[in-house]
Amino acid sequence: MNRDGLTARELCRLIIFEADTPAGKAFDVILILSIATSVFAVCLDSIPTLHAQHQGTFHSIEWAFTVLFTIEYFLRLWSVRSPTYYARSFYGIVDLAAILPTYLSLFFAGAEFLVVIRLLRVLRIFRILKLVQYLEGSRTIMRALRASRPKIVVFVMAIVVLVTIIGSLMYVVEGAASGFTSIPMGIYWAIVTLTTVGYGDLSPITPLGRFLAAVVMIMGYGIIAVPTGIVTAELTRPIHSTTTRSCRNCSAEGHLDIAEHCYRCGDPLEISDDHPEY
Image 1 (cartoon, rainbow, N blue to C red):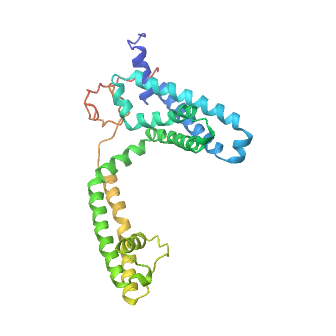
Image 2 (image 1 turned 90 degrees about the vertical axis):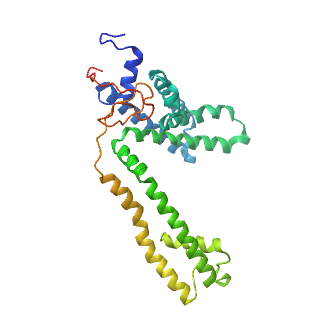
Image 3 (image 1 turned 60 degrees about the vertical axis):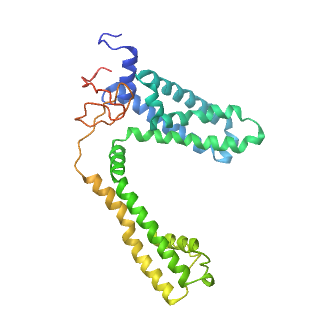
């Protein structure tokens, strides 16, 4: 326990999870730079010529970052009162996914498992997801997406019904002569056309089919804007601001400034006195 009455565990939590202290900000900056550098190294290692010339260097860099992130992961588990909450959270799973592939590759060293090793190397890109928790704007976007979910689900269901009807009509109007050999093929064409992708592998040849295609194309421009409008409405909705306070019990961050309890585990939130010296 230090002179301010903080245990080593609480001090570690303040530095790792709180972002309103000099030490916490410095920790976040160092971690962000480490994540970005490790992902950049993984990307460079995927280039055959660079991998052949600097395989040993990339291997050393990979293990250095893996050890660093492993220490960070276990410090996060140790510093909170309920480690299982953090371990099962989105960022806890991402943190684990960022380090596991390197250790798993030790058990797949045979030539017959080269494909598996490549997959494990690609999985290290999960480290980039760790950056999301340090971007304040991402919390606003995620909150808007969660609030928009019921409306978007209804919208998607309406689109499914619409493309099914359109695909069935095209199957009846055009038939196998135009490539519409089944209703699923017609639905595929409707999805491609409605989303304005237009691969061109299927196209109507009859006047009625072309008229229907024109209607679907025009509808596509209006329909694409609907999800954007739903999410934008939620983004502009007045909401309470969030703070950098983290729960001592489960490490959840991004609580509302008026929140008294953690939104994840329900543990009471303590009013932060701030520790500017840390």
